[in-house]
Image (cartoon, rainbow over the protein chains, first blue to last red):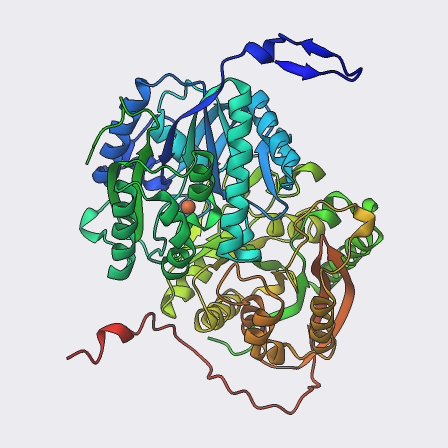
Length: 320
Length: 308
Ligand SMILES: [Fe+2]
């Protein structure tokens, strides 16, 4: 890289970073995290036993997980609304988190033993980039910290082998503290900072926005939670919003989707309020190509879509 | 049920971990810690044999969750304030009370369930309260969640269900509500020495609420709940619920001796330690304009009615 050094002389600096391949985002995934889908899969890490359920989502996830197997990547970076921070965005900053994750809302469904590896170098680079961009941010270095169940559910469904390191970024509560519009602005800025850090890192990264679309839950649960005769969307207006947004995703109108997101959040309590989709789309330059749709289903009344944005036209397909 | 459950005292305490983990870093946090310590003594002196906690930092969706694990053990770390340290805990819960409370919730039309799982994430507010108010586990405890969608009717009925269970089992109870007053925190890092209430408006409202508490006017605070929510509560949830539950659980009146033991900022939020002791005197001459609720009827299917 050509630089002017402090003495004002022109120098040729061929440092390692200068020749490192540019990092890139190889896939973006909208990956909802109802613990129900992990519960329904009965992985050995999860204590409760189920008789299945929510196939439209699980089979969609299985398909996307197979696609990921064919993509070369180094790390999964997740923004999750279940690590909620009021003081900026926080980044996981230790190499390993081994624990049991018990869902505070659905402890009957999700008690998951996990052993998570974190790409701390990338995490630190993203946090530094955020800080440089004026975004309040912090590394999380407490070894007793429990990784949230949103991260775990999305990552398990996308990569059940857990053979890639991850980074979790917390969700700043700017929707609650200010407004949906402020959330959009702040999450966009974070997306740009993260994409810059990924480029400079040389990593190939999969981004994950871990959340549902419409997000109104039933407040009662069937005696058998996986009894699919009881499962349906909370109300039709939620469904109509979900379908509209999915249609726009198919049409590659992500700038427009992010534009109407405040309205959707207001109308449907959409879990995108945590900033995940905005952050991911901003990091990916607001894709204008069609999203791959892998599935849509309600979970305890909420609307959940699995979608992926593949920047590579040769591997991008129409899935559903 | 008996009309006079034996409630020895009520406490309103803040949820943030600073008084537990870092009381030395800020004089105000230290004063809150002292106030917690005083309340610990007061609970012991009161003869209470149950600490019943309603925590605003334990959200639930499937109705109302009640902690029933007899001996939960874990290490908790706060989402925001992880840098202050970890909170090891081992608590003693009153499982019998938890089951009884759930039963009365259901009798009154609420959806409720007990939770008893190893490793269940007990929330920051409950951990802070129990570690400071009951450090040696001398008194069994019970914790009830705050349903994110619930509103006044459910909270009032939830409070009454607690009274039913207290009466039925003859417990002598310290009622503890874990909640901030104003709950807007700074969205940036601050030096502990610079902590203050986020805005003058929040501070004024907090002080007005504290006047009510000092006068023992708990039911009046409950009636003001919607105003308080609109003025000084970040809209994380639909309403300011703790006053409804506390007033209901403690008997829906204004006859308490109130004492504000501390009022300080916690990263900008209003943190107060307040004690209410049932008394014979009463304050206030207001008639309440919102109807009382005995049973929760659920959704009334308004949208489905009247259609041609
Ligand atoms: Fe969620």
